[in-house]
Length: 235
Image 1: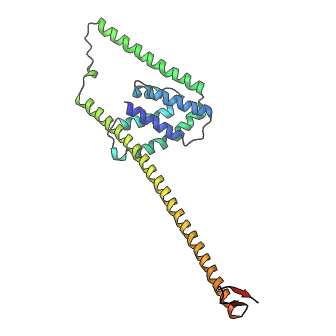
Image 2 (image 1 turned 120 degrees about the horizontal axis):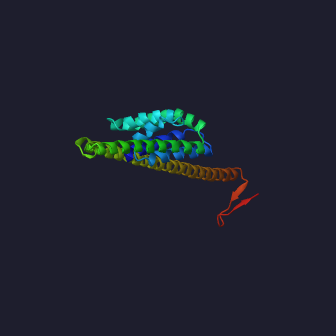
Image 3 (image 1 turned 180 degrees about the vertical axis):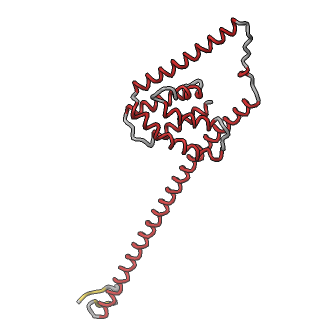
């Protein structure tokens, strides 16, 4: 179930990134992600969270996400569905963050643990009663069926696709950055060539004007050309 926990935690992170959080709210989000990531039974904990006031509204939304992940998932639409799930969490996450502090969150977490302990005690007592009545209790849940194998394969495929999507996003960003750099370099080269051409044109125009000016001065007799050493003298 690691992929399920990772998916839910990432939904929570993405939803919180759309909110303006203070330091206490950031801490609460971190604690919430910790509860999910360290859970030994996500389905059980989410169901128990619905029984606790501080978590009840958010837990309903988390339970919808969990049911989606454990059902038949259209892999091709997984990315779009993730956006829907993360955006759907924003309202419920905001409500919880407005009413819960790190201290009250930890207290609610303790309630969650107490529910697990109470349930475990009841299960232990039931097993003890069955043993006293000499009834053989066969746990069929540990039998590995074809459904279990298919579920594990499905989870493996989901995890691989999520990682592949992240790699594709990184590659797309890298290519886009390279294209931007190449475009900037090409634009800079165009500007440089234009400046060189403008400089050459100005220089050529100056030379032409200088030659025309000297020619005009010669025609007006202001400058006289002598034959000795090809020097020009003025009168």
